[in-house]
Amino acid sequence: MSVLKEIQSSEQLDINDLKQASRIFRAINHPLRLSIIRLVEEFRRLTVTQIYFKLRVEQSVASQHLAILREADILNAEREGKNIYYSLNESRLKAISRCIETLKD
Image (cartoon, rainbow, N blue to C red; front, side, top):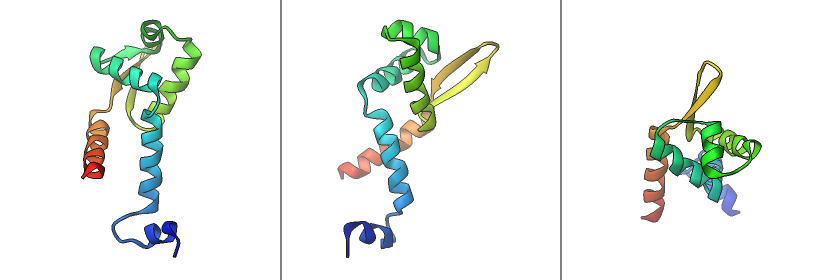
């Protein structure tokens, strides 16, 4: 039996959960995205303009990485007028942290 079939037939692991976890870990496994997470953690709430200015990257680059973090549900986006403010999804980050702790054990 292949490893993939073993995982799929396991009562403890769901292949869809593993795929989702893989997407999340890929989303945070990038130096610029980690910098964005740290920056938003420090300032609590930032616009894309503030983020690209502080990180000294092009607006389009920052926007692409913010989209990846939003899709992974790591960042919340809240529109106020013409601005979109980004903040951390604390519950998602706690779940990721718990997952990492479980994997370490």
